[in-house]
Length: 346
Ligand code: SF4
Image (tube, rainbow, N blue to C red; front, side, top):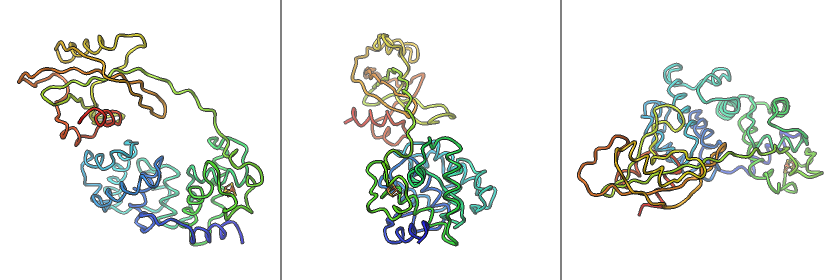
C-alpha cells in the first residue's frame, strides 16, 4: 500500500470523534480552525459547543455585536483572531451573500485567513486538494523525510507543502488533511512519538534514527522583561477599571490601571503620583503582591499596589469606572486582570 492509503486506513480506524468532524459546514470548520490555533483540542471542545449554540450560523455571527462575540471567546486568548474571524464572516455576508467561497484565492482574501486556513477550509469543508500545513503536519513530514533544516525557512515550508500536495487521494481531500493532523496529534507527538504503533513507519526515515531530533529546533531568543505597577483602587466595595483604546491590541477590553516602571523606582511612590495626576486624589497605597504574566514576546513582572478611597458619596472620577465584583465579572478583561481578580476578590 502507498503512503496515503495506509494513512487513510489508519485514520478511518482511529480518528477521534470531535464535534467539528460531524459537519461539512465551512462556517463551523472555519470557527473550529481559528479556535484550534495554539489551543489544545480538549480545551477547545466546550468553547466550540458554547459558541455554536449562540452563533449557529454565519448570518447570526455576522449580525452579532463584537463585545458579545469576544465574551464567548474569553479564556481562549488570541483575541485578534476572533476579531478577524468576525470581520471575515461579515465580509462573506456582504460580499458573497453569506456563502463562503470554495476557491482558494477568494478564501485567501478574507481577513485573518492565511495559507493554512485556506488549506483546511478548502480541503475539509469543500474536499478540494489544497495542502494545510500546521505544526502537526510540519513535525510529521519533517520526520518522514528527516529534514535537517529549520522548518520556519520558506524553502523548507515549500518542500513540506509540495510533499503533502503530491499525495492527495482522488476525491478524499478532507480525510487526508485531517489524517495527517491526527497522526501528528495522536502518534507522531513532539515528545516520545509512538513509532512502533505508527501506520506510516515503513515510509519514515527518522524512525530509523532519533525522531525527536526533528523538526530542527530554532534557538529561543531571550524574552524581554518589563516591570509594571498595577493599581487596585477600591471605593465602597467597587474597583476602578479603565477601558483600553478602541483600536489596537485587546481593543475595548477592561483592566486595572497599570504602567511601566524602571527597575529600582519606588513602586508605592509611583502609584501615589499616578493617583494624584490621574484622579486628582491623594491616596495611600500598600504593596499587595507580585505576579508575572508572560506573552509570547514579552514577560511582565507585575507589582500590585492597593488603596481604598474611603466611603465618600461622590464616585465621579476623571478616568475609568467603578465596578462591583459581579459587574466586573461580566466585562471583557485582559488575561492578567482576570487572574488577579480571581486571586483577590472573594
Ligand atoms: S514512524 Fe515515528 S517519527 Fe515517523 S511518522 Fe511515525 S511516529 Fe512519526
